[in-house]
Length: 510
Image 1 (cartoon, rainbow, N blue to C red):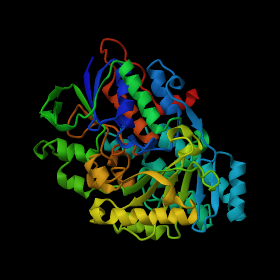
Image 2: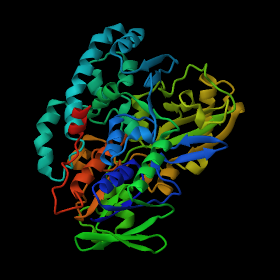
Image 3: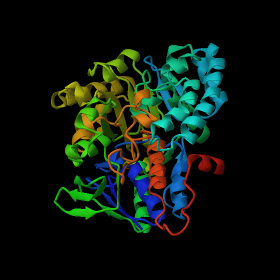
Image 4: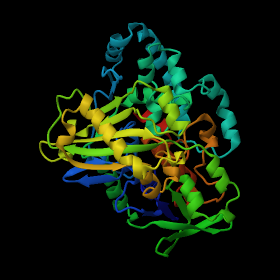
């Protein structure tokens, strides 16, 4: 049995803890904040519960599998319910496109905008299955530790036109500009620019069609709490308010951690669910780093950040025309994304994600009230934007827009509110440059080109979460926990270790 220390308790860290405990290891989680979850923290304001981070649950079988490996049933811990529609996408005129898993329904939606794109959409969807099978089932749980691992898959990536962006890939099949946006916005959910993220991310469409979009009753925080309960039942130890100040190095290996209060904890393996750049730059002195120098880290491209307002109202907005997940696209698309990702400029306009979970689950708000969060992608802190000055006006502009177009008398009805900006991601979540999703998903920062799941510096330091392979999003970070489980291996070296868990075997079991 090996002693494994996990730094951070996002879904990648929680998933790794469950899997390693199930293999017989001794596992302890050290979390800086006062609650589990990392980016999936829960804010509680005036009787409202707001999920701070991920709200779109795809590939629910990956959560089910975590409980299966522990000999449990997920249904005994938390309830997941399917959503229909998956998203309601609005154009800048306020016209809505509902997206779900029913092809006939989607074709009817396409008819409202451009009937000529029906056939193109069907061809687009037909191409996403082989992309999904290669990009998700086959590659998402492979560690890509050697360059030869990348060389082996290069022909398939070329065949799948991975050199195209998601937007350009969708544009081959769909002519209407708004519909192109509808079928290309998904990289924004994992920190990518649809005009830069490789077309392999078009597989998200197939993944959603295959398993749907789900919601955890009680909020995503209920899913975090369920995993925390499972970890403790398996004998894992959870330390909250326990910030790690340093990873201790002993030659080619790491030997433990030093907490911010000076406490030292020995470990056979360390799994970092902290931001990769933060782990290297802030927790390991540069003298010990041959490959991940500060200069290399600074040269990498990082995802955008986010401005998020969490607010609750004293009235319901059930006749607002909104759904559970809403995407509100502004008139500008390419130029706005260029402002955010390339020019590092805070634009006057915005596109928004508006989450309205009380439509599905009124229990997360006081009776008769509605809970929301609205998210606007913004540049990370490399932009130099002074958020101490800009947060107030930016908040006012977003709430005014929502009041004028979707939620009448909004500001007069708000009874709970909290907002975060890029400073939150940098200062509270230790995310380099305040990036919301760590390393940006572009072709030259994918697979082998991303920070590896096993450190290139130390034999027994591993990474899970958004900054390593395969990337951000719940399926991605849970896949990284499968990789680390397989890299560390079973606790009993005298007996045959269980067969490695793979996404392929899980898919076959469905």
